[in-house]
Amino acid sequence: MSNKKISGELFKQMVTNGAIHLKNNHKEVDHLNVFPVPDGDTGTNMQMTMMAGIKEVTAVNSSSIVDVSKILSRGLLMGARGNSGVILSQFFRGVYSEISKINNGSVTIKEFIQALVGGYEMAYRAVMDPVEGTILTVVRESAEKVLKEQKNFNSIEDVLKVYLKQAKESLQRTPELLPVLKEAGVVDSGGAGFVKIIEGMVMALEGQLLSEAEVNAAPKTANAEYVGAHNLGEIDIKFGYCTEFIVELFDWKNFDVKTVREPLEQMGDSLVVVTDEDLLKVHVHTNQPGVAITLAQKFGELKTCKIENMRSQHSNITGQDHSQDTHNHAHEEIKEVAKKPRTEYGIIAVAQGEGIKAVFEELGVDYIVDGGQTMNPATEEFVKAIEAVNADNIIILPNNSNIILTAEQAAKLSEGQNISVIKSKTVAQGYSSLIAFDPTASLEENAETMQEVISNMKSAELTYAVRDTEMHGVQVRNGDYIGISKSKIIVSLPNKSEAIKELLKSLIDEDSEIVTIFYGKDVTEEEIEEVREFVSTLNEDCEVETIFGQQDVYSYIIAVE
Image (cartoon, rainbow, N blue to C red):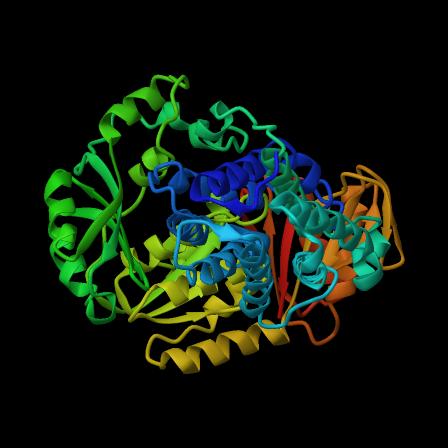
C-alpha cells in the first residue's frame, strides 16, 4: 500500500504502533544505560511518556491530523518522564507545530518532511546545552536526510523508510560522538528508544498493526501501582470522582485561568489546571464532575472527557482485582495531601526511601514526589505538586540529573508561579542544599546559595554492577560494588566493605568537616558502625552523621562538606 498523504486516522495508527513497539522492547533499551547499574530506565521513561500520549489520542474522534497531533503533543507533554521523555515530547510538539500550519486534515509528503524537521528543531530548543551523540543527533540527522532527498520520494512509506535507515545509522555512530558511550560499549539509549518508535510507525504503514489490547493495558512498571495496595485498608475518599477533561478555548489569548481554577478549588481537591495556547487541561477530584465540566464549557469546546469513580477503583485494588485497567491515579491520589493554605515558601523534593523522605520533611520539604532512580516522575506529577504546596515562591529539588529537565518543563507549564528548580543531581546534593535554605531570604538569593552549596560539596553513591564493562579506567565485573561520584566510576570491588572504604578515601580529606551517610536496606548496623569508625581514621575531626535512608538499589549515599 502506498500513501501520498497522512490523515488523522493513519497518523493515530502510526504513533500508536510506534508506542506499542517501544513498550514491547523497552527493557532492551533500559539495558543500554551507560552506567552498569540496576536502574537503567530510559526505555521505561520513553514508553511511559508515549503511552501517556496514546491514552489521550485514543479518545480523539477527529479524522484531522491537526487535531490528533495536537492532543498527542499535549498528552506527551504532561506524561513526560526523564530527560529522554521530555525530549521526545518536544519532538512531537515540534511535529505538531508544523502540522498546525496546514489548512486541511491530512499532510502531504513535503509537509510531513517539514514536520519531521520541526520536530528535531523543537527538541534541540528544549535542551539548554544540546549534546551530540544522543537522541538529538538521531532526530536531526534523520530529518536532514529526508529533507535533502525529498524530491526522490513518491510516498510516505518512502520517506519514513529512509528516515528510519538514517536513524539506525546515526544511532550506530553515537559512540563516536560521545566518548562515554564508546567506553561503556553501548549506543545512546534515547536514540535506541526513538528508533523503536519509528520502526513501529513503519510497520503500521506496511499494515503490521500490533494488538490494540496492548494499548489499553496500563504500562506495567513491576506492578508498581499495586505494591502495598492491600495494606491501604478502608480509606475515606472525600471527593470520589477523578475528573479529567481538555477544552479548546474560544478566546485563549484573553482567557484568565483563575476564572476556572478558583471555583474548582471550592469543589474538590488534587486540582491541576494547565493551559497551552488554546488548550485548557483540568484534573480534579470532586463529587460534582458534571458541574466542573459545565463550568469549563463556558470558555470553550469540550474535546476529551473522562470521569472515574475512585471509590470503586480503591475497592478493586485492595481486593487485588487486576482484571481491569484501573486508573493510574487511584493508588497515587489516595495518599496525596489536600491543598495547603497559601504560604510564602513551598519546597518540593524528589525522594525514595522512607528514611530519606522523613529527613527531607524534617528539613522543611512540603511535598515529596515519590521517585528518583528506577522511576522518574512525570511532568504532571510536578504540576500537581506545585498546585498542592500553594506558595508564593516554590523551590524544586529534582535530586537526579535525569529529572531536572522534567521539573523545568513543569515550572514553565505552571503559569503565574514563581519557581526555581535547583539543579540537584543526587539526594546528597539536595540534602546539603536544604540545610542552607533561609525562609527570610528571597527566592533568587536562596537559589543562588543552594546552588553554591551543591557546587562546593562532594557527593557519591555505592551500588552494584549488572554487567561487565570498563569505564573511566576502572574494570567493572558483574556483581561488583561500584562507587560513583561526579558521574564517574571511582571504584569497583566484589566486597561491599572494601568498596565503601575506597570510595570514602576518594571523598574525605583534611578539609572535610561533615560527612552525612544515608545507608540502604541492605546495610546492617554493624556495617554502618564500621564505616563511621573508618571515617574517623581518615579525618578524626570530621563530624559523621548516619541516617537509615531505607533506599533500595543504593547501599550508601554520601554527602561530604
